[in-house]
Image 1: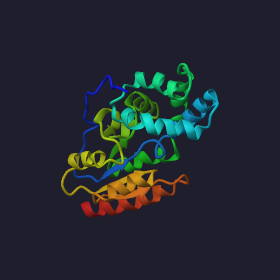
Image 2: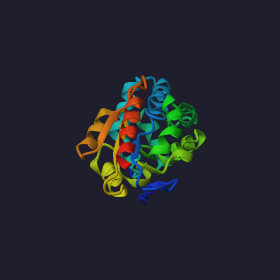
Image 3: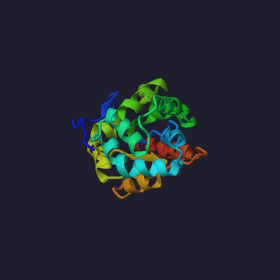
Image 4: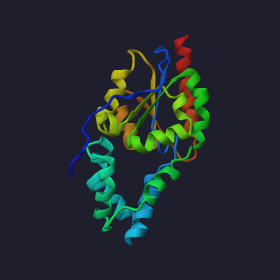
Amino acid sequence: MHGANTQRYGPMMVHEDSRSRPVLVLDVCGVLLAEPMAPLFRVVSEEAGTSSNRVEAIFRHYFRDALWSGLLDESAFWPAFAAACGLGQPSPAWRSVLRSTMTPLPAVSRLPNWSRGAQIWLLSNHRHEWLVPALQAAGLHRQTHRIFISSQTGAVKPNPSAYVQILEQASPGDSLLYVDDKEVNVEAFRRLGVDGVQADTSGSWTAAVDGWLAASTRRTW
């Protein structure tokens, strides 16, 4: 596989704001938006006459890192993925599955309150071509200060480079909290000294964010 576009971009700076406020770093899919990859794998597996586990394994082994990091061009991914799954060509429905499944999760309703007390940064392993329209459709860009998407930055979680870029952008002394639905990603950030919370499907993790934000706000007074 050869990437047609290897240019790297910095984080999307949606809103600039006071750097004295705490920084809440959120994963996107599985935290704020529904995860689209499992539904995609199911649709592809049905067309290929195989299991979704096998399709996921193909994606992870041959495509994941190159696609998320931007080394593999998004337009080149689809025919290569179809061929690897034993299909002649990708279905136009596959992109529709991605668009229709990235719907807002309940935690989105908490962002207005959180954004009043903290800077909201997003850190996602994803394609900007897929994610940015979903963020805009959900109105998340209006409450977000910075967005780090792996296909633009080239840094893929849980590689430390994905987290170092956050530390480099934060101001010295900033209070940071990271939320991700995958434990391996949370632990990788914790190893760099950043507190982390794993998002659970029940949504109880939002209480931990509320507590952290209250404590961080008191420290800034």
